[in-house]
Structure formats: structure tokens, C-alpha cells
Image (tube, rainbow, N blue to C red):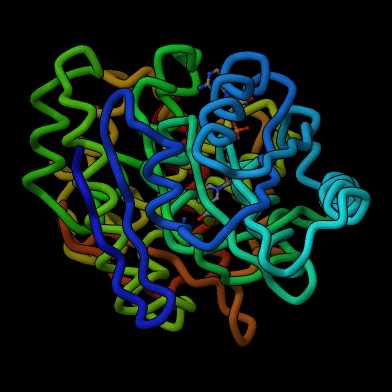
Length: 361
Ligand code: NAD
Ligand code: GLY
């Protein structure tokens, strides 16, 4: 088992990574005084993993209840949040309880937000079951639900007590979801770690990857970045590489058409093209490496035909990352080095997107 520590003073915690992990025992060690647990999961994951987990936690002396949400990004809502609140209140959970998120990023984000606000804050644990959640969303304490007017618009920074990433969960994860998780993996290579990018490039697909190493490397980077900048005042913004353009694709195409990771993959290519064309240091050859790695991992790189440059601008103007009227873009300066820029005009970005789209037709 690998362990990555995330140093945040009183809110520090470990990320445990491995196969066939003794989850209940690890939770007992991490939460020696806790008795009451509410496991939050969804209708897809619960039939696969809930029962054995509840049994082993009960064997460790925990009193365990569950709350099963509907599956999907479209259920990352205030209604699902209220479902958790109702379950907690109906069973008389007190401030000493702990919520357990058993699922991907959707379950993790809702559960974390519920934990941050139930009785002004109770403990929570992340047990990520998707690759994306293992390498990104379960670590770092961003929690949220969506509002009909925007993704992740209601939330809090709130850290879990422990993250337990058991790679065996990935055995039942559909290929398309593995690919979506790989977009976030590739992201770390582009923004922070050329050696890691080259490793992913040379493997040419998940079959040749050491997944335990991949998850650990990503968690090490995420732990490093979050330890420096928990509340995204500076460096943490780099983790949004590909996301500003990606969110525009998710919204523009309608939620669910592109998975989050698929939209981020296209967004990374757009951001790299903008970087190469606006003299941020990235060469066209490096741009091509970023574009060409994606098909190895079954990820798209082409801008959807339905969206114009102007559509992107109109969606990005509603993003959380707009500050003082300027859209902030995370752009790579080379592979392994990136920075935030706000010197690109809407018109220039719109033109570059249309230009890139024309080369892709
Ligand atoms: P997800 O949670 O929707 O899971 C993807 C699908 O896989 C779902 O249908 C789920 O039921 C299913 N699934 C999960 N684990 C499974 C397993 N082991 N076997 C079979 N099926 C399984 O999607 P995701 O990609 O994990 O997360 C996306 C969400 O994460 C988005 O809402 C995004 O905003 C959020 N996110 C948050 C952060 C953060 O820092 N908090 C970072 C990145 C993304
Ligand atoms: N997924 C981006 C972040 O955690 O900051």
C-alpha cells in the first residue's frame, strides 16, 4: 500500500492507494472515536460494493447506515443534498458522526458538501471508485453541488479525514470512464511534470501503465499543490488546465453529451493551441505532442462541430474563473510548466478557436 500525505496543519490527512485494501480496518485506525457512519453511494455502485463494505465496517464496531442517490451529474443537486440531510436527521445522527463517500466525483462532491454543512460540519471519508476521483476529485477538499445556472456553484472547501483509493474498484468501471479519468492524469503531466507526460506518451495506452504508480504520482502532485494553496488563491488554479474550455463544451453541448474528462481533453488541446499561437513558450511540436497523446487513451481532441469560438466565449463568461471581467486561462509554457494568463482578448480567443476548428475539419 502506498501513502501520500497532504499537509494542511490541523486538516492534514493521508491518501492510501493499493489493491484489495482492508478499508474497514483503515477507517477504524483513522477514526478511532467515531461510532456512527452514513455511507453515501449511488444506484450503480451500491449493488456492487455496499453490502460487503457495510458488513466489514460493522465488524469493526461501527454503526452503519446508507443513503443511495440517483446516478449521474444531473443529480448533483440540492435535492440529492437534501436526501442526505433527511437520512441523517431521520436516524438522529449527531455531530460526532462521519459521512463516507463511496463513489466517483459526483458522490464525493455532494457528500463532502453535505459533511461541510450538516450541524455546521461533521467528519467525512472519501472512498473513490473512479479513476478521476482517485487522481483528482477525492483529494483536496473541493466539494459542491450544481445549480441549474452553473456547475459546482454551491460548495465549500472542506477536507476529508482520509482518502482510501482501492484500485480494485476500477475493475468494474466502464472503459469510457477510465478514459475520462486519464484526461486528468495527462493534465498533471502537461502542467507540472514532463517526465510523467513522457511516461504516459511512451506507454501509448492504459494496458502498459502501472496504475498504482499513476494514481500515486497524481496524488503527490495534487497534495503538493493543495498544501501550497488550499483555497485557490494562486497555484491551485493550474489544476484547472483544460477546464475553462472544457466547461464551455460541457455546457454548450448539454451536460452528459461529453463526459467531464472528455471535455477537459479537448479543452487541453484548445489551451495548448492558444499558448502556441500567442507566444507563451509552447512550441507547435509540443502542442502536437499534447494533441497526439489523447487518442492513445481513447480521448477526443477535436472541437465539437456544433460550437463556434463565439459560443465558447459566451459560456466561459459565466465560469467561476472570470475575475474583474477577465477570463483567466491556464496555458502551458512548455510540457511540464504552465501559468495563468489573462492577457488574451475574447476576440483573439474566439478567432483562434475557429481557426483550430477549421484545421480539424
Ligand atoms: P461519476 O461520479 O459520475 O462516475 C462516473 C460513472 O461511473 C457513474 O455512472 C458512476 O455510477 C459509475 N461508477 C463509479 N464507480 C464505478 C465502479 N467502480 N464501477 C462501475 N461503475 C462505477 O463521475 P467522475 O468522473 O468520477 O466525477 C465527475 C465529477 O467530479 C463531476 O461532477 C466533476 O465536477 C467532479 N470533479 C470534482 C473535482 C474536485 O476537486 N472536487 C475534480 C474533478 C472533478
Ligand atoms: N480539480 C481542481 C482542483 O481540485 O483544484
